[in-house]
Image (cartoon, rainbow, N blue to C red):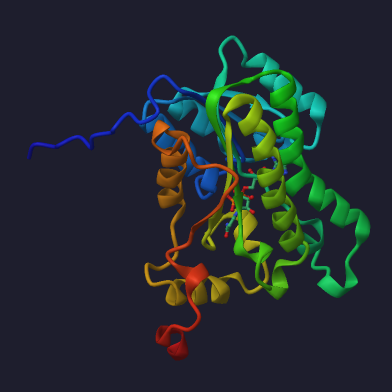
Length: 270
Ligand SMILES: NC(=O)c1ccc[n+]([C@@H]2O[C@H](COP(=O)([O-])OP(=O)(O)OC[C@H]3O[C@@H](n4cnc5c(N)ncnc54)[C@H](O)[C@@H]3O)[C@@H](O)[C@H]2O)c1
């Protein structure tokens, strides 16, 4: 039988990007990377040195013919090295897909938070975004009209008790997107947005207590169901493309409608 190739619109032809946070094939960043390349982009993959050793990012880099550079996103020095190493042409887009809570990982209850862990969590999950944007601005690494995205979760606005201090991390992350979005927009016409994604089965996601119930509840509550990592890849492509040049400083829900729901009869039967 004749196989019809899936056509790509090449929405990212001639664009160069950096994707942070692909650990394994479940990672949202993994799917975003695949979608970006299928739309014609040339990308650099990066992750923390430990993830380069333990994860499967090497496989992805080979598959996509993408260069791979290690960087701890909490280290300004590493971020500057990364941005300098791949210069020789400016970057058109960046995905920040990084999150980790030490208190959640170590099973600490929200009312028994360890503050050293909390500071580390904020540094990894939120301040790294500011560090990345500040380094990129100082090095003039982003092309005019470029697009910067970070992934977030609705726990920044609503209470999800087992999400721990990640809720405050996401609130901080979204605030950095707005504040830096002003400066990057004014100076460089660069867009900065956050995408608030549905619960997704990944290493970071499934580390949250009761994730399965939480995932099923969101899936039933959302008229379109939970948005997959693959669909998130499509949305990121749209946000990196020239079709969304006037969208900035927004927190964009990619959640099948969850954020607007009050009650859905479907959840009464779970
Ligand atoms: N999975 C979900 O349910 C969900 C929902 C909404 C938003 N998000 C967000 O999506 C993003 C990606 O998470 P994911 O679910 O794909 O999980 P993931 O575990 O696959 O990705 C998290 C990534 O962060 C990287 N990372 C951790 N510390 C780092 C450091 N110091 N420097 C550089 N990288 C570091 C990890 O190596 C990993 O690749 C996170 O911001 C997460 O909060 C996830």
